[in-house]
Length: 360
Ligand SMILES: *Cc1c(COP(=O)(O)O)cnc(C)c1O
Image (tube, rainbow, N blue to C red):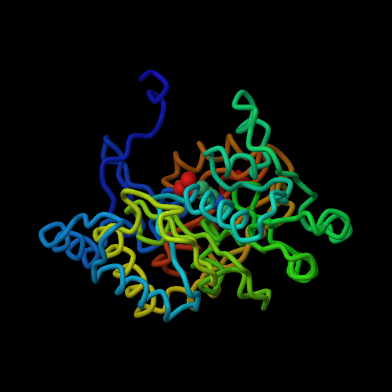
């Protein structure tokens, strides 16, 4: 347990704030790595989950229940896909997407991007780029290759009739909050289509935050498979894989996936998002950080990365001392994934605090 000794121990949360064991208050601008989109301890969500606990907690994948219908109906107000497969995490959503792509196309090759992050189970890990996450776990799943992110020519060379799927984050998260270029996404869409391959868009981190429900909506293309997780049920574990083709019954499944409790949490989370227009408001609350140590602020809306000229790690600790929780994405990027309920004033305080620490 000594591993965790030095870490900040959080004991409660309310709205955009969390408290540690010594009663210190922090503005949580990372929200459990982009999970608590409605903030902490949302009362409406808490009571919905509470009621659900007393009504029906589990049904099992062989039964149907109204909470699933209601969650999917709420989802359909934001986007339209024909089929939805539930899991319990982002990596499971990606595993399902990769399996479905091979099943549907009858092909094996999966193309992923440099700096990509898709999760830590074997399939997702095989699509993930970073050596540190892969090392020691080889052999990974065969059939995966990586091409340079945002490089149109490399995509043209790599995508062939052998390709089953291309997987991409519209805004790379873990890799450093790097938005995909429009021309790159368009190339991936055109070439997958021409070669009988599927385009998988991993929205586990980028959903809800960019000013659109899915970040891929900015690119005006239709992906074949979308994966979601993180904020979808505001902290209740969930993963979701969306397709427009059916997968034979029994080919894929999950004991906990799509349970009534998670579905209720998802439905309630989406209902609040819609009612409070939190997605529409994300862009006007965005900030940009200025200063000598800053190369640029990138990302969109409330998914932001501050690219520094130096390592970002030490600033995470300094910001914590000033009551602001953030984390890094790659070595030189400070990552902000605040709750979407944050106010413009609070975001301006975040800006001031970061600039104060960087320039002080
Ligand atoms: C976090 C993340 C995952 C993995 O999600 P887990 O819930 O940690 O398994 C997959 N893809 C992206 C883009 C992510 O940011």
